[in-house]
Length: 106
Image 1 (tube, helix red, strand yellow):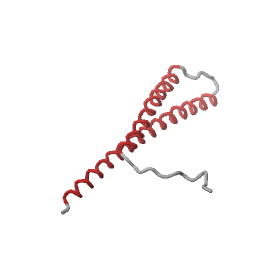
Image 2 (cartoon, helix red, strand yellow):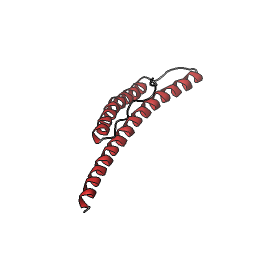
Image 3 (cartoon, one colour):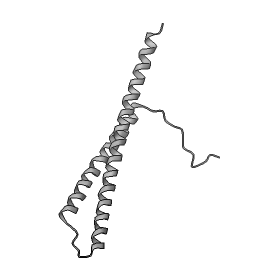
Image 4 (tube, helix red, strand yellow):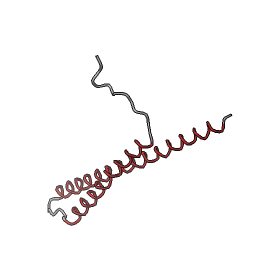
């Protein structure tokens, strides 16, 4: 009986799969970046007004946290897209190099 938690067969790396992943990550990064911009703009346009110093500090902390986490998510997806794009270039380079190397041997 097979373990339901064990992963299935691992597919080999290919430039196509890494380019597809890069495209997906980049596509997700764009709306998250736009959302980050809209959140920051909304916070700037609607300041929190209170006479209570503690409430002001909590408001500033929460606004910073929300914008920071949104920016972090954007950065993670951008770095993932760039990494997958670099992986696809590396895979293409390795395949071309191995093809040229075999051709030069007697």
